Length: 293
Image (cartoon, rainbow, N blue to C red):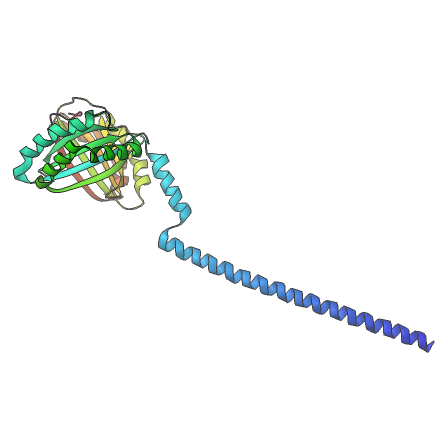
């Protein structure tokens, strides 16, 4: 009887030790898992903070990609790439400049090896005087590169550049895309004057500007036909340009007054003006060789 009790007690003691050993191992595993979880949480927090810091410094990659798609797919027509050139000429060189480009620019546009068309060339009549604007239409970015490479190997063009440089006070170039709702007019002899309006927008406001402006355009179209509208992709950024043709300044005045009487125009002006940092208007007259004149 005593032996049986001793055996039972021994078995119970061994079982208790085994259970304690098992529990000790389990607690160790729990502590290990807890430690791993804590380390992972700390790592995740560090990665999250690092990601936020990167976003602040360099911009969120997803947002940047969405912005890029918005510009190229949502608001751009996407068929052509336009270059808006501005040449500021020394006053005593204006006549020589007109003669020089009148010979050479049609040559560039009419050369089938160049993937480009000249939309128009204008001289400023009111605004930044002694200035000339030229708008070129390339067959996409590929056409832009092909044309530039062609001109680099064109000795006639290199001679033109040498003659041009001493006449310049400064020159600017912007690579632009057309707004999807406003295709550039084909060549036409319309006569009269052209107005090029340029707006420097607050950064990040292009989509908002486009959304309001395309509604207001329908108000203006009732009284005059727009020539074109572009937004800058390379060069001075956050710029929007649009061009109109009028028979004369009095017609321009009447047309703009009529637009204010149409529902929606005042709202368009109110919503777009607050997006603008700077605006400029140049009244232009086309040069004799300009396809739009």
